[in-house]
Structure formats: C-alpha cells, structure tokens
Image (cartoon, rainbow, N blue to C red; front, side, top):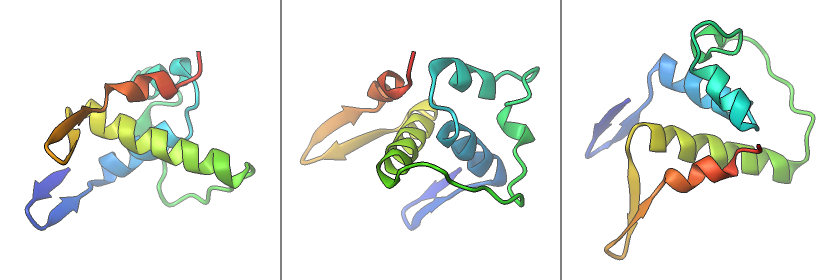
Length: 97
C-alpha cells in the first residue's frame, strides 16, 4: 500500500488480502488467510476469477466493512475525527468465533 497526501494506492497483494478477509467470516478463517500452508492463504487468491455473491445486501456490507477495517488495522492504521483517534483493533471482535 502506498500512502501519500493525494490518496492511497493498493497493490495486487493488498487487494488479495482484502478479498480474503472479505470472504472470511470467522476467526479461524481469518487465521487461515495468513497461514502459508493453508489453501485459503491470501496470496493464492486469483483476482481475475469471477466471484458470485449469494448473500443478503446487509451481510455483504458488513463483510466489506469488516474486511477493510481489519486490513487497515493489520497495517497499524487508525482513524481520526474531530481530534479523536479511533483504534481499529475493534475489528477483531467482528469475526465470528
């Protein structure tokens, strides 16, 4: 990920990691995407393959939110609003046990 004053550019690996997080609803699945021995390791994601959604729009939105916040947290980012810093570690609680 390249961050500048003009914005953020994501690498292919960043996109793979975000997609893998998006597709991982449980803590166990989240651990698998970082395990090089797992079939679910994020480097194995083929970004050119088609992906079909079969879930409710609300669930899609929650999965997308969880994936992005978890990705940013893994890179040690936080959010800031009105001078308050919001740590993103809360995203760990969004994965199902």
